[in-house]
Image (cartoon, rainbow, N blue to C red; front, side, top):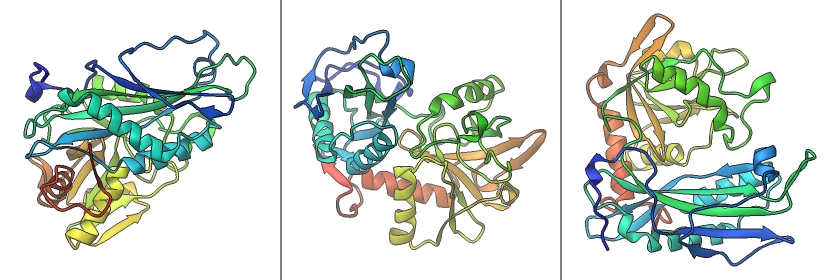
Length: 339
């Protein structure tokens, strides 16, 4: 039954859907996994996820096409990234082929919650894994749970494709004592306080600089940066502490191989930022959101091509990427998985 939801008014929030996928790891192996209606999780108070935060998550979306098919965008990349994350956290990787199959199962089960084509909304999938058995000494868990829930969402930033204003953060995204973000940008908790401060000050996001020198652009709390030079080159910041964004990597491929643009993935000095023609934030949730202004402790950087609307090059990248995601533009091989 189609859901009675005002799809066009959705924000980026949680709406409970009917089904979720669950698989458990015990005695050295993953079980077969099930689709269940139960949205609740019961764990010991001493579960490793509570004591030592042994957990990780992914994010991807399902889309409805103009001809009413349902598709997902590059879920194999999410499967690979989650396996890399699990390895770093001493967790058993969920098999990548089973990850993709679980995505198909849970989207199919919640097909009525996939928003109609043209509403600007999508079905967001949140795969996550956690250590579940009691652990009091500092060590990894022995038992784990892998789950995927879904929720229909609208734009990540209010205003959709309208340019946002961000600030250079006074805080480091890195964890205390220079430990930094590990392999897959796992510790989002470290950005919760800075983003709360930014919102209270009227900004949509933070720009984090590198913790060591505070001279190089890294990322925001929930997205990677993209920049467009005055001669039309796409530039993306490079750093070991930046989340390896699937959206950013897809944009770079689109820019170089479909739009014929020059692409540079390199260190970006903050001193360069004022010279770029366009700036945007990219990620699964944000897709591509234009940045119009950056505030830096009393100084203001404006991007003339994106002050009132998405800049022309950013728009072309956005339209091409979303066209591929919705099957309006032919996708590179393997990028689209039909449900």
